[in-house]
Image 1 (tube, one colour):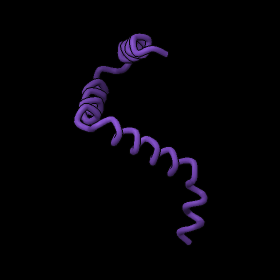
Image 2 (tube, one colour):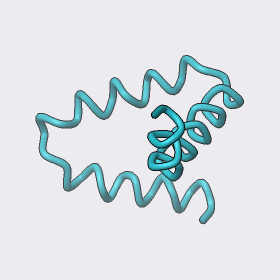
Image 3 (cartoon, rainbow, N blue to C red):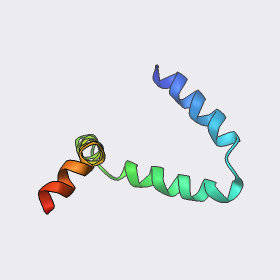
Image 4 (cartoon, one colour):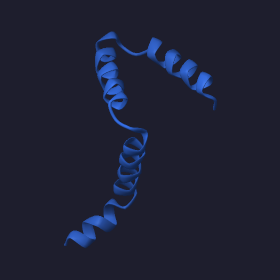
Length: 62
């Protein structure tokens, strides 16, 4: 999906989001603006690993 298509889809979704949630979404997006791309990718990958390997990590912790 191109950047333009992504932005269009995001806008469509935002049009359907309750008004009281929009401020939270804006704050969330502004947090991403503050960080370099490599840091965001690292956090995303770490979250994916922790989610996918939750059972393994729990067994290792025991």
